[in-house]
Image (cartoon, rainbow, N blue to C red):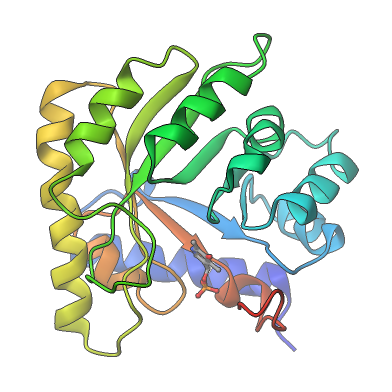
Length: 233
Ligand SMILES: *Cc1c(COP(=O)(O)O)cnc(C)c1O
């Protein structure tokens, strides 16, 4: 059976090949290991293989691992939907939040970010595949939310994130990722601190890297298949 170490090596190879194909430096793409539903022991195994940044979707589950592994110096990213009543816990425990889609949530995270911690790094989530049920702001409205976030001293806007609807059609994958990349350009022109395009997962990281991803969020290809939790995978 493939171990987490083997899987991480395979993912690094995929990233390197995709970067080479796009004429990009491999180190311009950061790997976020998405550890939702997996144990602290699995996170530790990945950390022992050199992985330093981990993503979690569920607040309680994430904080249990953060607490258990607090001596490791892991960089924790919150990538799930943010509920208002969870903003304090998120602001206290995570270094990054990828899924900002409302001013109210940004304001609450800002207000709750402890003064002894550096500003919270945040990304605006954009709905690039136009599904009514999916989260993220509509393309074209991210500029207004970005302007709002820039006025919040305890948040640091780093870029955009998207979770396109899964599709085996690689041309369509690339179209959605290209849209997110286009939306980043005007934000970056306004703000030199914008450096992150969070897009690409286990099944579509090659297409995301071809379209300029700087951070891929990979769960299954590292940790294996997930059991359903909270009705989600
Ligand atoms: C679960 C999840 C991932 C990882 O998905 P895989 O297909 O397992 O790589 C990435 N991003 C977000 C926001 C997720 O919820």
